[in-house]
Amino acid sequence: MAGFSYLDDVLTSDGVRLDTVATAVGTPFYVYSAHVIRQRFRDLETGLAGVPHAIHYALKANSTLAIVRLLRDLGADVDANSIGEIDVALRAGYQAGQIVFTGVGKAPSELARAVPLGLKAINAESPGELERIDAIARASGTRARVALRVNPDVDAGSHPHISTGLRRNKFGVALEQALPIIREAARRPGLRFVGLHTHIGSQMTTLEPITRAITLLAALARTVIAEGIPLEHLDVGGGLGISYDGSGTPDLQAYATAVRHATADLGLSLIVEPGRSLTAPAGALIASIVDVKHHPGGRRFVVLDAGMTELLRPALYGAFHRIQPVVRDDRAPATCDVVGPVCESSDTFGTDRQLPDPRVGDLVAVMDVGAYGAVMASNYNRRPLPAEVMVDGDAWRVVRRRQRIDDLLALEE
Ligand SMILES: *Cc1c(COP(=O)(O)O)cnc(C)c1O
Image (cartoon, rainbow, N blue to C red; front, side, top):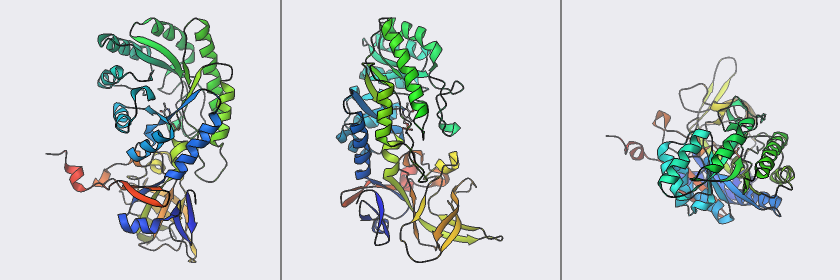
């Protein structure tokens, strides 16, 4: 029983009843299926078999230790977007040589710590950053392995807030600026220039932008190599979307095939940095209905004990997430707006949704929250971060306990 499915009309994760888990841990909570993560990682592994590659899981999608350790055990490496994520990776048992460090604004303190670690690569964003990395490396008597993030001016076709590969976006250096920057970096004594990097956006639902960006990056790599600057790898980023609403999206194997074709004959090792595509479908947010309100004109609001504080994506990007009852019965479906408890009208998970005649106390599941769910949660309204539960086989366990008010106040005078 893989993933989320109904068994005797009760929603289960890998066969574990989620109403039972809710009784034990309270709501709201996130639940993750280890099985789904394993399956998705192996799909990508299989698709890339035969070409030298490394799968660097993008920690920012979900860096709960239990998930990071699960992926490490599967053979994943990591992409970190901050020194905090690097620390999490090290504590999860990763070696520095398994970590690439990305980020549009790496603070001096982050570089001062990251450079001497000897990471697999620091994906530099600008000539200024390369210069700063060089200075730190020389001062500490090391040579930092660096790649350059290139912005290929390719439209990812996803929501503007999560498109990163257009000229107007803040990320990387423009393709036509790259060559002189690479030549200079290759001459710096504190740097070892090892690769090229791109990442044009997230939640891409077609492969065309990805292959276009990779093809441009591969052409640049050929030019760089022809100039006598040897490269080790091509890092093609992440960004493969998932189907939040049931419409078709390319699967991980199709993605892998497209990546392989776009880089064929290059002779470089490939790095991919998937985040969402590995973990999003593996997670659900389980919440309780705390109120049902009928407004004049017929709108019915179903208020949950979870909202934008537990899942920001609908408020931030107007993102769609399926919402399902945890217990199915024969109550007639009703049309309702499913909302959170926070004092913001954007705190809405879905409008005009169908739920079986909702009642206070019912459990609902918000689906596909395994990526960009828990990591974007906040304490707004002094709401404690929810518990996180991992289901593995027929067992489940709390992998992060619910925050308490004491945790929130621990840092205050
Ligand atoms: C966010 C990010 C990723 C992962 O993106 P997904 O859409 O979750 O696959 C990969 N690489 C970089 C540099 C990122 O910033």
